[in-house]
Length: 241
Ligand code: ADP
Ligand code: MG
Image (cartoon, rainbow, N blue to C red; front, side, top):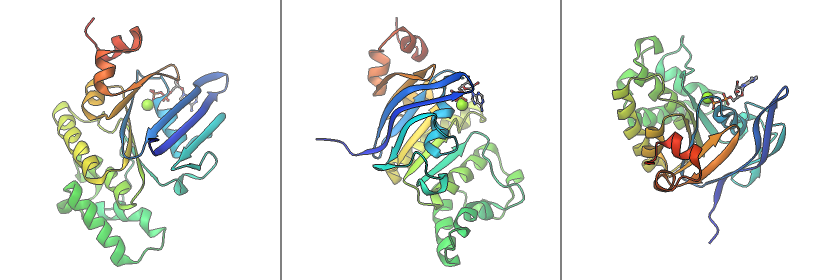
């Protein structure tokens, strides 16, 4: 049986000036899976995610989302929602304003906007915060709002770039559980970038371990941990020697 692919990346290369950051990279992400891109700082994780999102132009290669070639398609048309480490909320708007902003551009009726915002607020447990400004929120609450902005748009794919890195260890652990629950409830494809091995092992359906713009191994967490493909993967994931 051929599995339906959510995202296919074909021979993707990207250079900044003379520096090759992604090197003829291939990756198939399954429909509905939680895929973690794991690797050390500077290995190209954010660059790859930004290419999928359409925030960076590729140097060579192609990107398909749901079998559609989106390589040169603008970000807003790709059916993706991106969540950044820095939250990227609008400081002058309330939480409700932040959640509804992306929908107003679509000329959606107000009742529909309100219904979507209320549903996202319920799922993320931020209902009581809807009238607050971001400056009055904790880091964890801000990140819930950032996730909510993707949720209200009803996107096919969520892209997360180290969304928990600014939070303390206790909150990180709590939000990991919530993200897992969100994925189970929604069933969307989620691509999650991190340099944190524990995060990868606890969240992922599959992990792609990256180094120097190349994927070293793509497999289930148990396989990555117990049968690392090479010494780099073993060392990075902390497998028993
Ligand atoms: P990661 O997210 O894995 O930490 P990045 O994708 O941010 O890595 O960066 C990969 C490499 O590309 C790094 O060497 C970084 O310095 C370089 N890089 C990233 N963005 C730019 C840019 N806009 N211009 C030049 N080099 C960049
Ligand atoms: Mg990064």
